[in-house]
Image (tube, rainbow, N blue to C red; front, top):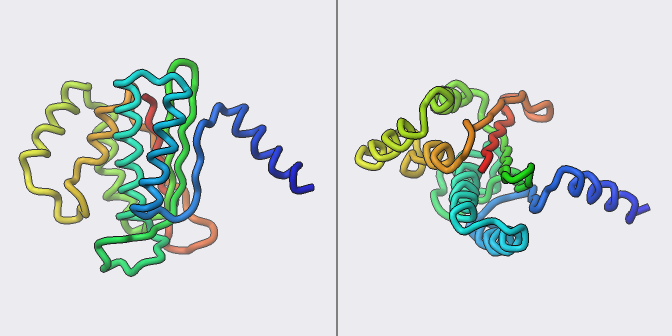
Amino acid sequence: MLYEEFNEFWDVARKRNIIFFYVGYFSQHVVSAISETVKARLDTAGAAGPTRRRIFSSFIEMSQNIMHYSADSLTPDAQLDQQMRRGSFCIGTRGDSFFLLCANPVSTDNVAQIRARLEPLHTMTMEEIRLAYKKALREEAPADSKGAGLGFLTMARDASEPLEFEFVQDPQEPGHTIFCIKAII
């Protein structure tokens, strides 16, 4: 029975061309360990150097978003280092492209703010995204940002298509919404 359960999951992952999947709590140590595995998996998947760099850059941004903003935390919100927050991440292939998919719970109160940062990226050209990135580098980080405020711009800059995202009410936790984001590289 155990093997059948595992094999069902493995078959679904194989059919969807998933080369890496993790769900659980993210910390700097976990991200470091995942980084090594992701690098090795991208090598065996035949990803070219520039593609590997863009995938790895987006993976780091997604991981940082989970560690900074996931609403499910094992560490106090006020703790700025060694945070441990829940989320999930996967990398897969579709044709000649790679996709990165990330999900984590966020406070429902933050959904409008996150959406307002992502929606403009859909209408921007790659040149506009690059210029916005350079401008953001010169400016102060937004007050609500726990990093430099460049995460979504970095992912949009690295992606070959507009970022996809959605928000789904968390059925198990009132006040939380599951935030999903996908980048095609």
